[in-house]
Length: 65
Image 1: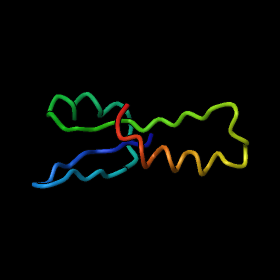
Image 2: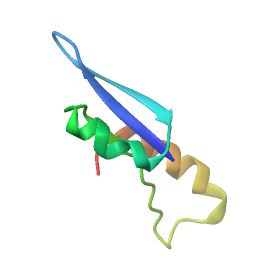
Image 3: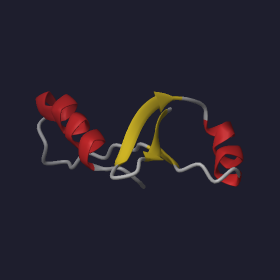
Image 4: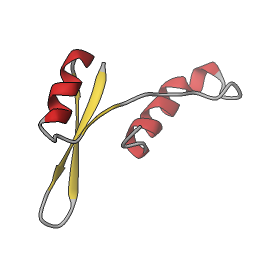
């Protein structure tokens, strides 16, 4: 499962993507880590050949669920 963690710097946030299992999420949240699951949704009107591009754009712009 693809996930993202937010690391807050002094002047701006940084987002790091990583692969992990959902069973660790609750433990991370209990430790107050800002971890989000990256979920891609694709509209039915998007042609099949644009799927990969659509996912990439969503991963870039969608930071949290």
